[in-house]
Length: 124
Image (tube, rainbow, N blue to C red):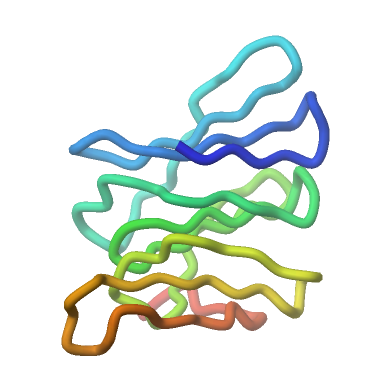
């Protein structure tokens, strides 16, 4: 599980179960499930990292290269060109966001990075 938030009444937590990734939001009083849009990537069982610029601009990355991006309350899957697990995401501003991941022992090497440049594709 990973937690990020810009302030105490706007926290996000990510993780997963064997059958689906989970995202939660804390509003200062209680944790609530966040609806995940239907994903184009099959069998995403975990989200590994959450990071954002502020409460209305949040990235979530996870298994099979999945990237969820929340802007203005709407969440959507964005395709970053990665198929391996993305395990971390961070940036300095909206134009400079980087996700990294990897699978030890893979033929492509243990780690890779994906620059999440605007705009990302909503379709493959």
